[in-house]
Amino acid sequence: MLALVFFPLLWQTAYLIMLATMLMDLDHLLAKPIFDPLRCSVGYHPLHSFYAIPVYGLLLLLPATQMVAVGLLFHLLTDTVDCLWNFSHCRECYLSSRIYALRNRVRQLLGRVKVE
Ligand SMILES: [Zn+2]
Image (tube, rainbow, N blue to C red):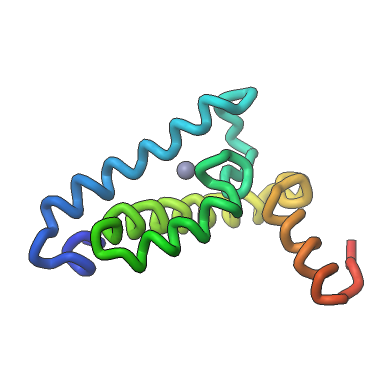
């Protein structure tokens, strides 16, 4: 669907490339434990880190890497939705996530008082 919307003329190629971007989950192999259903992968694993995300944004600007960038950013979007769903059932998961740590860091940088 995404391949058809963003790359209607090359949708088959785009589909395969975007499918291949799921390989970014191989970075879970570096974590201990490898799989933790309550852990939010966004901001935690190297290829899901807050440093990697702007790089994927830059890849979006280059025509040669746009398909990969759309796939990677969509992957992160779905992982984020997964995290938010998880947070809605598990407050401790939210409080221990890198998303929460980033939120607090941004609030500090903006001069806002840390609430919790
Ligand atoms: Zn992922």
